Length: 439
Image 1 (spheres, rainbow, N blue to C red):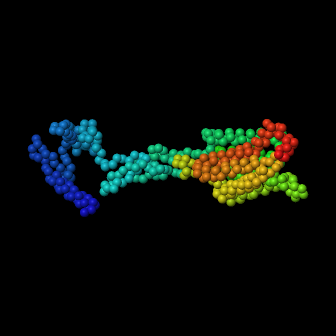
Image 2: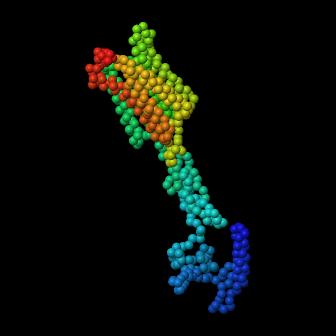
């Protein structure tokens, strides 16, 4: 016999017993003895006499006590027929009122989970899942919060998610990056001023001082581009931040490539009757810089035309937070910009490495080699870090790469020259450079 068949059989037996009991109760009549009148029921099966409600309980294992705790008056006004004094009742289990339930009520923040029994009133209370709430007692299901809201700790109410980005107002990261950017900008400007003051000295003239000026300006703007990454992003800043650093660094690396090529051309042109002398003018380095940066500009224009970066609300990376970030739009466009920078840097590194030992009045190739090695290392390390971080720390990785690569270019290329200009002025003469070249 199955459980359901057994349950149906038991219910049938109970109904038959109730019907039989009701039949005999209706046959009860009032006794003629007024001193010992027995209760009876009328034709509707309802009692006629009033009666007391007695609470029977064991005082100890043998003695029983009965306490009058209420009355029932059938002929009283509806709602006043039953009167029970709850305080007078003595309950068996620790004095607590028994509950006619097999499960406790599920408070808000939880839902009912049916047990594997035949009784539908029996269930367990389980907390709502992440992102869901219930705001009523004995809720059958939890409901999801809107995408811009998140449950509170009790999971009985939704409240707005925390909006996160690198803010100027209350974010230490923004203060640190702003300080480093300004320091880098001021140091670069100071070096630019030194080069202007000593523009007619041999150490500044070496390897084309105009390219040095262009490189310093691009480094200054690279430091300042950090501020495009700070604050709440919007569509305009998202498009500017990704394309600005790409073009500025392409100008900087193209300038270093042009300097390296000019070292090679200068060495080739020293041979009698060399055809390389016609390339010693200003046209070649400017052409290299213009061509190198123009290709990057074309990549950026295509990127902005096809699928530009835009402001995006990330509601999935962190629970309870909305990350305001820049979506790259076209991933191909973003990695094309980085890939082209890497190509320029690799070509400049290889060429500088090959010509670093060539004799020259002041061969910058060995310093350019170190700068390109540092530049490539920073951006190669940036890619896995960029992909593995989330939220505002992704932007922090980009900012760190911009600051580190800019500082690397400045330190490797210009600090040696500034050292000679400021502290070894005896080396900043044509005679000293020629003697050094002869050695």
